[in-house]
Length: 237
Ligand code: CTP
Ligand code: MG
Image (tube, rainbow, N blue to C red; front, side, top):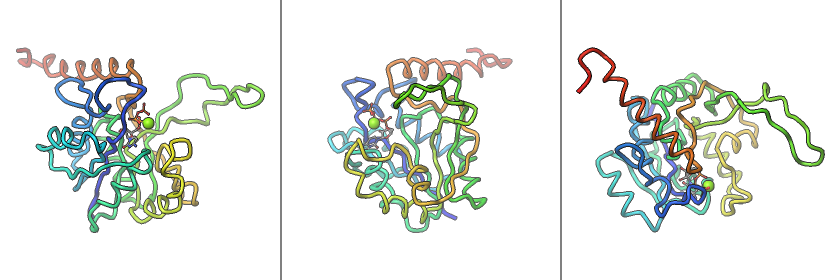
């Protein structure tokens, strides 16, 4: 069975506020999009990678991605539109498709493999999740606490039976053009047409780099990973 991943990297990163698109922001030795693609490929579970890139920066993305055996496609005005464009470029033999945010650059490869495994086990739409650690209130109308034990935070990569994902995107295509109407992830589009959604364990390292503070966290996580080998006997330079 062919497995493909669409890595979404076509956003601008307005909340991060850098001069470059977010996916080109560097942590450690490489831009976020390179870390994300490396993790997908390191899982050993994915055969093809398609990356959605912003049209004005397509050359810069092609350059940083050149060593990585990926196909670049120009994204759309929203994440949902970009995923639809990426999905259209997935090879016909791929029956399983992952959708992964370049912004979740430090996702461990084991999470990627877990999601693929769940789809291959017959789950048509799979989302990796982590617990909610904050208390949560609903603020529409009367302010009311929400029971966080019933909630999870959704991450990516989300994994799909290819035909299920394609149907979900076709059904929602009319809302893809506008940020206020488009979906922020893909299991929500599946749920909207009645496709059952399953969860697997995500990982805290798969945080979505969104705000400047997240880049500080990501830099620290990478630095901590880099020091692990030096603590093994003989590993110190
Ligand atoms: N994305 C995309 N195409 C878009 C918008 C977003 O491919 N038109 C991608 C982003 O590059 C990112 C992922 O979707 O990897 C999640 O989106 P988000 O974190 O919102 O990134 P941005 O839209 O770039 O950031 P912001 O909303 O702060 O502008
Ligand atoms: Mg966005």
